Amino acid sequence: MGLIERDVVTALQKIFATADPRLKVGIGDDAAVVATQSQSIITSDMAVEDVHFKLEWSSAFDIGRKITAANVADILSMGGKCDYLTASVALTGNETMQWIENLARGMKHEADSAGALIVGGDIARGPKIVISMTAVGSAQSPILRSGAQVGDDLYLSSLTGWSAAGLELLTREVSINSSMAERALSEFSAPTLDYTCDFSKATAMADVSDSVLIQAEQIAEASAVQIKLDQSLISQASEFAELSSLADELKVDVFQWILVGGEDHVLLATGVNLPGIRIGSVLAGSGVSGVEMKKAPVSWSHFQ
View 1 (cartoon, rainbow, N blue to C red):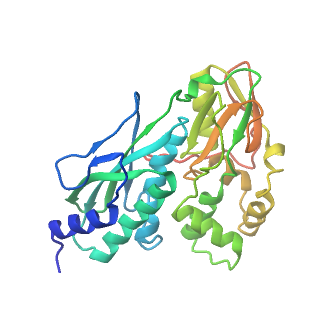
View 2: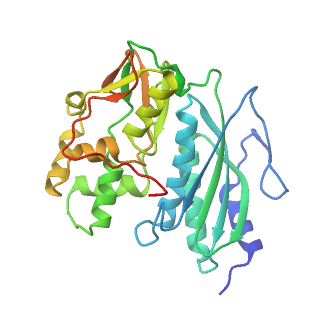
């Protein structure tokens, strides 16, 4: 049975309904009306079926969480708090109402975790599922990529590589019955954001959506400094032994996952005495140094 747009909108109104006083006018009018701060942080992110997610790998709920997390992480990486989200979705018309509702519930689950409201969006038809989300947040003093200073250290809010490990398991169709494999699959399907890690005193920050190497290069270039990574420090992280054990089982260099894998949505920050995992330092110079891997790193690109 084909979908009826009005029925979909009505279902979404119920799922996203809120009495939060920040929302003045919600879903139902041509646009939402919200309370905003003196300055706002705005970002957008898109997920395309068979590029960013596969229906046979992820549930609708996890897909909803994943696209929402990607947007919220961009706000967090600016030192901000996510306030509002809008979601525009292209559907093929073959989805069930339950699938659509589960997608929306996944979005709301992650939005609730961030303290954000989903206030609107759009629905269209397309040959594949495409989800585009916009996030609006606020920060008194946004943290940019250009603020790293010589003498800073480099930190991760938590260990990267779990999402890449999950992707490895899925693409190679490897079945491993262990808590480590389960976590990797879970983090690939719906990454966990580090909401409690306080990087408010960071000098520069980025969301690790592409890879630690790419984001470190971006900070180095924007700040006109050199980022020196220290793999011995990374290997001291509390989760490293578990991730390394899984990598050994799959005969993969664990640093390929940690440094080159993406979609962890962990925060990478520079500063002094920050929480999280110290993984390097900021020096005079340019570029990224200190990387020693068994083979040349190959980072993710949409257009390779």
